[in-house]
Length: 195
Image 1 (cartoon, rainbow, N blue to C red):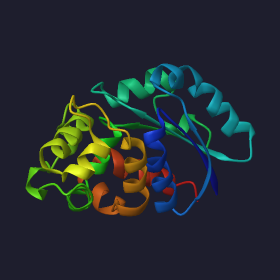
Image 2 (tube, rainbow, N blue to C red):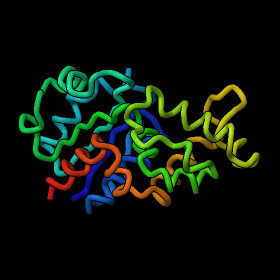
Image 3 (tube, helix red, strand yellow):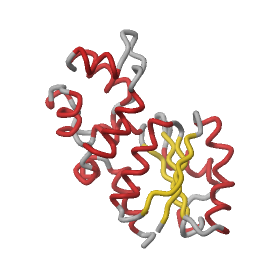
Image 4 (cartoon, rainbow, N blue to C red):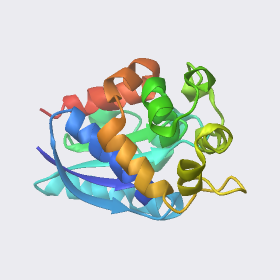
């Protein structure tokens, strides 16, 4: 099945595409929305596109510390997936996409050249996984890698988006991560139901 993706930003496209590939589907078009303020009002339109179109849709939105269940209900208007079109998958990433990546500590340690022991066993408990990953790289990554990924003020570096998408598509062990991140496991299970 071909699945289009809608995400908050360009650095989340690789994550969405990795989910699609891992569940045995084909990557369709990708639509980064430049923030949740642009994504949230459009969610119902993508549900309609799924209901009346010939492609499935995957929508990913960070919880940013909010309760994922309440957030999902308030944004979609549905408390359960059974009320949505069969080919519409709206998932809340808890707490944000970097937390799902941290579920694969071996992959993160190897890609960013950081100590494996510094990566928490339960990344969903981190309040700000993105900041955590940026700080981890700033403290431990080799200089050349660090300059690409994170700026001295801890904001994303010039190649942050490129590196996040490269990690997601070529280095992330999504199955291993799903064993450590329950919300990721549920997202994969939901995509597998589309078969």
